[in-house]
Length: 146
Image (cartoon, rainbow, N blue to C red; front, side, top):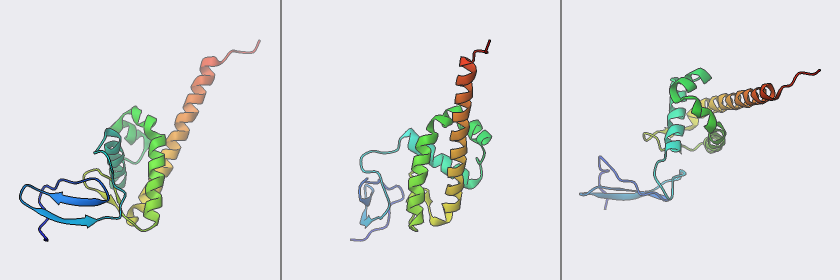
């Protein structure tokens, strides 16, 4: 039985999306996107979604803007973000959409150049953080030669 999609759907996580409300149940839609299979949103997923969204919209495109918006703790997530961005890029390369699980946003192949650019910025942030850490270690352990 086909019904209209309810205004406020509840989503069942798995290989199918099932929209439900107290009055209506719609048909099951098979989707070909990676979706969560065991839990809902977590703070990291929200951070990743917001960061990607802000980058694409131009709100946040430099290290300074990232730190002003997210705080210096964003630097501790760079490695995880790089890994996730690489996975998203592989998905978009196939011409598929990618669900961010943040405010119902989906990335399409049109977003590919933005994601490549974001990946480059994250690489620069990681390199800068590593260099700063090495310099700090060197300065802390420096002993002048006699």
